[in-house]
Amino acid sequence: MSYYIRRMCREDVDQVTEIDREAFPTMWPPANYERELKVSLAHYITACVDGTATERTGEQKVVGFAGLWMMADEAHITNIAVRHSYQRQGIGEHLLIAMINLAIEQNAHILTLEVRASNTAAQKLYHKYGFTQIAIRRSYYTDNREDALVMTIGNIDGAMFQRRLRRLKKALFRKWG
Ligand SMILES: CC(C)(COP(=O)(O)OP(=O)(O)OC[C@H]1O[C@@H](n2cnc3c(N)ncnc32)[C@H](O)[C@@H]1OP(=O)(O)O)[C@@H](O)C(=O)NCCC(=O)NCCS
Image 1 (tube, rainbow, N blue to C red):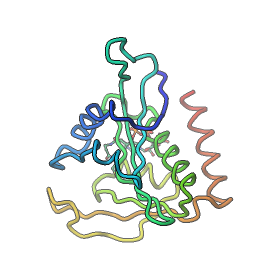
Image 2: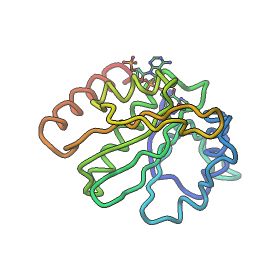
Image 3: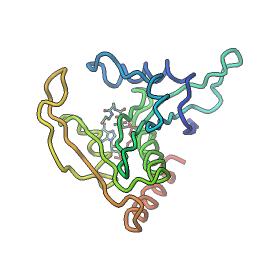
Image 4: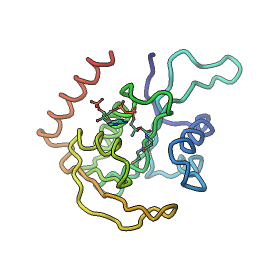
């Protein structure tokens, strides 16, 4: 399967909301992505399957998305999700790399996020890229009062992290083509 990553646009909102509901079924109501797209501090991207644009609507099949908010020199990843049937094919990792690059482009030095304590799959992805846990927000998620782990990477524009990013990116592209 061949796909590409681009900025999210208004036409993606229905599919992105569908992915959000599938990925975060207990979070109600789902995030309002139409509103998010209007916020100048927010940046969203989507992964789209090549060659799926229909002549009638021009819409591509969206299989994943990610977003961040910029706050001074800190970029906060708000969401990252891949359609269930497209998971474990490197798309989540590719979206994370694109988010990191986007954060650097926006002059961020630090990247942060929150993740459910039980979400070991996502934590594994974040650890792979050098995120470390700096805090726990107790009972952060309102649906089941689960704790959130706060994770961060500093100096994302520094030489050491850039070397790590290049190595991981190379390995990802070697694995998935
Ligand atoms: C987390 C998520 C985005 C990962 O996307 P994905 O496309 O399936 O992940 P990838 O195929 O790119 O995997 C990249 C790395 O993530 C980790 N990973 C992903 N899924 C995993 C799983 N089910 N079990 C263990 N590790 C996993 C691994 O470290 C993997 O690297 P590896 O292939 O070298 O082992 C996806 O599982 C998802 O959408 N989950 C639901 C939404 C969610 O929880 N988002 C995170 C909110 S904080």
